Image (cartoon, rainbow, N blue to C red):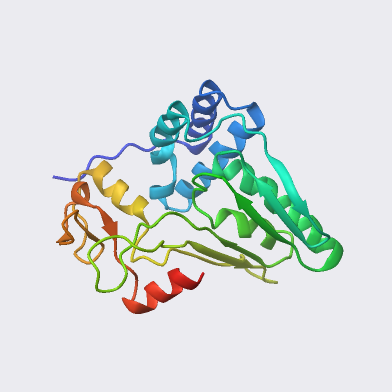
Length: 237
């Protein structure tokens, strides 16, 4: 039997997503940013970081983990650097703001670096360095998170899978972009498998007892891409 799929035009889906975030308490501009980043991921085929995330975001807002009306503050600033406290803002809101600020610095002094603390999930991080590439700049974004990946040969999480995204402009073609986690797959891929009722390949994850699993509902921790190489990359990023 062929798989049943429902296709939805992205414009109304984006408006729906924005309305959800508005009702969750976000200002209109922030809700627009949040919806735009999720739809961007879906349009690129990265459904693991698209509108699938909305229920989880709303749940975290309700729990107080994510702050829909954050007091984002610049803690320290130099001509080339920026430290921002996000006050638990939703990641796309504060990361978009920070990218705009560091891009302005790069335009003035040749380079701009931003560090964000106290923020939450950033979505598909490839979105942010592309902001720079579209302005004829090279962009690099690295995210850190609590341990969610096993050290090579271990059975429980001990390191983070530090997502990395790099984008550079080109003269004739679309911008060149790398967007990856240092685990075999991002955790969102496992969420997507749960949503679709599918199994996951062996080698993606371990269960709570440290055994390999193909059941996404039993996922407890991620495995590093390339074994020790992914571990080292995730550790040093």
